[in-house]
Length: 495
Image (tube, rainbow, N blue to C red; front, top):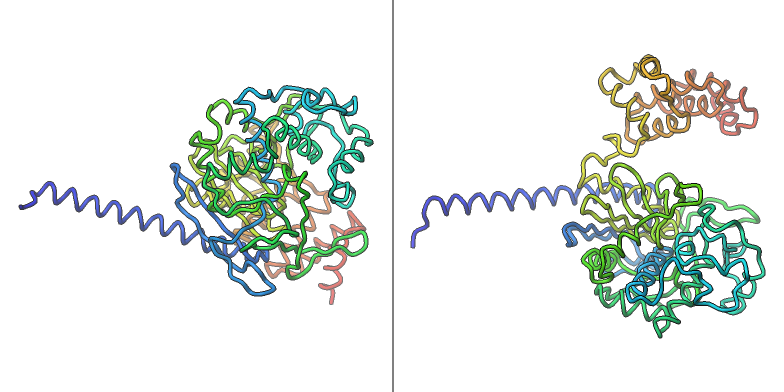
């Protein structure tokens, strides 16, 4: 039987389409691999897993590095990483599952479910606990250890003796006590221990075959371990040049706050299950899960300028462009669900201070081009306006362009710290000439800032201009005689 011309042409076009699509995906994946490996080297991350979800499917799932440095064991897609406080996002879902079953309301006071609470705790709501706006005293002590010697009753007795920290809803303050209370509530209302409830209703439903609860004291097959770049000497922390072993202990009663061990594949399947309605049946439940708390002053509060809000166990990345929810854990793991982009990215590492939340947006940029730092993503509004003009007129015109923008709009203001941060970003993007122009602009705008002169001097030094660098270090030190960095560089350059 002969194929007609149209059928042959259609077949050829389909082959070309899928070949081109696969080549594009491969190119994107290769670019991400190169970027991730560079970050691992820069940050001394021993092992890392990255998974990417689009259209309800895992489109990338790759593992790099060494899981166990002591025995030089290579990481694989079966390697299990601690996700630390990303565990709280599972707790948020568990509470919303009970809410869907009408066993609780997140607006209920905690005293409706737990007896013998201090009077000041009684009217705090489940929502305030989930969003870290409760004002509860923290069950972690000054050494960041869980009170009570791993005994729940002792821990609760100790924390109940502490005063409330602030009026509920007044501000965001990261707090573990409330999550211990949430564990008690889940156990009481579900009829099983909260760890089993999460295992049955989330791990099993999502097909998370390797995920489990545990910590450094548990024997976990294929565990990536935990490493840190700092060690404590007296009352201060000293940064190492190479990773050292870190130990993490999460008592069972504390495991609504931290304690889940997982893989990027399992976490990707969990995101897919959540977004497809397998974990929460109602879209309104997910909307509530991901809506940041509004404080008494009408604002939102979060960890920093990136994860700037907090919802029900989920930090939020509240911004105009590409908003996301972004659970982070232990400075070592991050999961961003981009709410308007059909894109989710999971990055797990075994290094505390690896901070993948700081570069996960850049990974997203390989799928959404305008999210690359090189394209200006993440810059404050007024910096973006300046960048737009400088791309047309040249970075060497930074000072007159800024003057022109101010003349056009007297309310236009360039923030010193934002300019400084942009200058260092340009340096990291291998654009020292543009960075130098921005630091010179910052000095012109803020002539009484020792930090502005210090940054300019540092950039001049790295661009092989030691004479000018020395002049600016001296200006910085004159403005701030306590500037140790400037003093050290002056001493070195004077030689």
